[in-house]
Structures are given as structure tokens and as C-alpha cells.
Image 1 (spheres, rainbow, N blue to C red):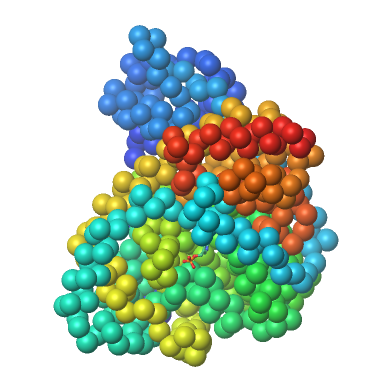
Image 2 (cartoon, rainbow, N blue to C red):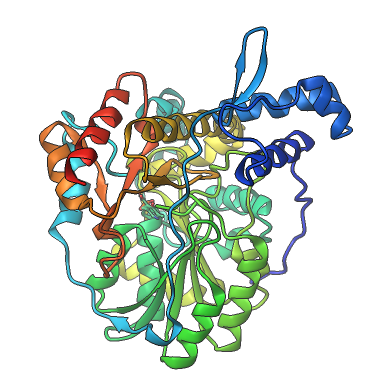
Amino acid sequence: MLKQDSLKISKKPPLYESVASRIVGLVDEGTFHPGDKVPSIRQLSQQFNVSINTVKMAYGFLEDRRVIESRPQSGYYVKARLTGIPKEPQVDNQRLNPSEITSSDIVIQVMGDVMNHNLIQFGAAIPDPDLIPVDKLNRMLSTESRRFKEESTGYAMPPGNVKLRTQIARLMMRAGCTLTPDDIIITNGATEAVFLALRTLCKPGDTLIIGTPIYFNFLQLIQSLGIRVLEIPMSPVDGINPDAVESAVEQHKVQACMVISNFNNPLGNCMPDKQKQRLLDVLKKHGVPLIEDDINGDLSFSAQRPSVTKSFDTKGDVILCSSFSKTLAPGYRLGWIAPGRYFDAVKRQKLVTNIASPTPTQLAIAEFFISGGYEHHLRSIRKIYAKKVAQMADAIANHFPKETRITRPQGGFTLWVELPEKADSLKLYNMAHSKGISIAPGHIFSTTDNFRHHIRLNAALWSDKTKWAVEELGKMVSEIV
Ligand SMILES: Cc1ncc(COP(=O)(O)O)c(C=O)c1O
């Protein structure tokens, strides 16, 4: 059943993306400053020895991402934003210690904000409701429930609907995985997938390695299971450092490690493949399994879907978790888990936890895939989210104090913002709330106070109607620094 040989699919990005990233590199390294004119399309085509069309596509890509702008009759210019990215945390490998998590009322409040329709929803990482293919999904729900009258009202016993599992196995080929439908169990969202993985691998009092900042509800979930965490601050560019993980597993008895490897929530970054491989090597050497959350993996801003760490796993040591909450419909509560060699134990946990996941939504999403709808849908939302993230980052750079630093997500829709050190993000949360804006304060992404002057903003809800709220937030930050 377990066939985790890595499948090597061509990973070369399209030429125009390579050209675009060379330009970004030149801006990052100071060859071109904000306001500078970049080479004309013809010049660049000659300098890089690529076609005019490739340069046009690269410049269009960079315009969408607000790196350059075209000025009529004049050419292309570097846009005046590009703030610094959040500082790299200092990791003292000798001082990494497991800690207990305390429950947090503020997490519950931030999550509850979603139900308050009077708030601008920059807090929870929910997709833009306008980008949910609601009519198509409703149609599928209705036709599939009619077509499979009996099946649709009965239990879809674990591992769950086989048509959906087949589609997921095919989908994950693009992330470098060779999974069969029999390697996959359907869950109630990624939250349940992670819950089942934790229940399978850890018991109360055990220690789990996590990279922080981390999606806050996972901290609460871990706390509810009585598991202690050994927290490793992550690079906003590359994610968790395998050397720090190695040092931690050498010093402490650790039961498992958990990472959000692609388009991390909140950082938006991707672990490079080499780092994924190295992390897996380190964990393997010490006999520590990995829980990998890939919920945003399909939301890449480029044509290239990143691989998952599981694609390098030949022994079934990685438990891969994901869901359709970011790409399709969070309310469907449908996710999945590929538990590797823990398949039987996880399946048992699923059964005793809630027997099965809802059948009608499994049927509908399977049919959505079979009709080719998912691919088409992804192509359009990825572009829109890339634009929203770039526009919101631009607005933050324009309206927040100049010391503010912002991540450069390559996918997903969250922005992680480092405010000037004096700013207390909890205070900002309360001020913003009173003006009808929800944000996620940095405190809740860690058990330490490393992120008390950070906030996470959901760019999915950025629009012409909500942009005033960023301006407003900028004024509030200026008041508290
Ligand atoms: C990284 C990550 N994992 C899991 C979840 C929860 O996913 P689901 O709604 O599928 O349970 C979220 C939601 O924000 C998330 O950001």
C-alpha cells in the first residue's frame, strides 16, 4: 500500500518567471532602487538573450506583483515600496527547551471575529467568499446527492470516498508524491488531520518540535492534547532550520516534529527543497516522524507548485495533512491525511473520533475534480491572490511607519508584518476592533513573546472597499509607537 518513492517531475519554472526573478534579485540587491527605470523590453530581450514576448510576460508578471510599474510613453520603473522583510530570529541552540502551552482567550476571540459581519476580516485566514465557486459546488452537491441517493446519506467509512481519494492521489503527483487512493484518509478539514496525527504520535507530556510563528489554532490544539512544544523560531525566508532541529533532538526526547512547509501560515514562505530533504534526513537519523501541513500548497503565485517534504520520504515517516479550506470551501470541512506507515493507527483514530466525514461534500468535491473544475478554479484564484497580497503589502508600505517590515509571500494569502518594536500588537488588536477591523496579533503565534510587535493580515479580503482599513491601521500603529 505504501509507495512513497519520490516521483521526479520536471520542476523548471517557465522562462518568463526566471527572467522576472532575476529582476527581483537586482532590485533586492540594490542594482535598481525604487523609482529607477529598468531596461526597456527590447534592451532586456537582448541582454538576457530571450524573446520580446518572454520579457513582456515577465514584466506583466512583475507589474501584477507590484514590483514594477509602467509609465505611459516612458517605460517601466521599480515601484517605490519593497520594504525590508521581517528580521531573522536568533536561535540559541543551547537554550531550546520544551514548554507547556496555556490556553488563550484571545485566540478564541480572533476566531470568533469571523462570525462578526460588521468587521473587516483581516484577522482569520479565510478565503475571499467571492472566490468560492459556490454555484458550481451547489450544483455538484445536488446532482451527486440525487445520483447516489443511498450512498449520499450513509457513512463514508474511513478511509472515505474512493473517488475523492483517487483525485487527491492524482493531485499530489504535482507535489512530487506517488500516493495511491489507499494511502489517503478523508478528514474533517486539515485541523482534524493534524489532530489525528498528533493523537497517533504523541501522548500527554510528550514533546513536539514546531517552527514559530505558527498558525495559532495549532498551539491550542496541541495544548488540548497535553503535549509540550519545543519551539524553534523560523526564518521568514526559508522556514525551520534543520540544524536547530538537530540540536533540539540531540538534547531532548522528542516524539514528533510539525511543519507548515509551503506558503506557511503566517509567513507565506516555502521551505526550499534542499531544506525539506535535510530536515527529513535529520529527523530520520533520530527516529522522529514528521507531521507536514500543506494546506496552502496549491496556492502558488507562480505556475510551479512546490513539492512536499513527503515526496522525499521513502519509509512512510511523514504524515501529510491538507484540506480544501483555502482553495474551495472552508465550510465543507473536508481535508485529508496521508499517514504513511501510521495508516492503520490513524484510520482507527478517525473511526473512534467521529466515525466518518460527511458524504455529500465528498461526492461533490470528487465530481468537481472529475469535471476539471479544480484546475481551472486554481488558475484563476492564484493570480487574484497574488495581486491582492501585492496590493495590500504596497498599502502597508505606504501607510505604516517606515521601520515596518513585511514578508514576501510566494503563495497563500497571509502577510506577516513586523511593526516597530515599541508597538504592542494586542493593543493594536483592541484599537482596531473598536474601529471595525479584525487583525491577528503576533502574541498568539508563539508561546514566547518573540512576536509581540508583529501582526498577521489576511490579504484575501483586500479590496477597494476594505483598503481604507489598512490606512486606518497605519494611523493606529503610529499612535502606539
Ligand atoms: C496552516 C493551516 N492549517 C490548517 C488550517 C485549518 O484548516 P481546516 O479549516 O481545513 O481545518 C488553517 C486555517 O487557517 C491553516 O492556516
